[in-house]
Image (cartoon, rainbow, N blue to C red):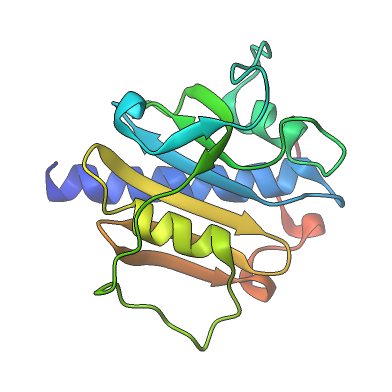
Length: 163
């Protein structure tokens, strides 16, 4: 992947995470996203009987609709194609621990953060990203945190663009 393509997918992931957060409203449960052209090679297992969304809405809208604690498909990571189309939802993602990964322990993070960081190093993964109201958002590529915005830096709902 070329440098310009790398930057483009990072920017697209950041914008998608911000849009999902804005559309999800107050009970946003957080989200984890993997972008891969070859999800069959990833350490994934479906958390629910179905891993397909029947929603034909735009990606951000569809992901926002399921990103609530009461929705059956809110948990786990969601897998998108390189064109940011939904491939699978509600996937348990268990990448191997990468001891050499640089972890900024000054941040208050959890398992979703580490899975996204480690998972971004897997062959076939173009980028990973996470977002939650308490943490903020982060985008990873090849084991590096490329974007981080603390929760207080993510625009408030009133400042976000209308739907």
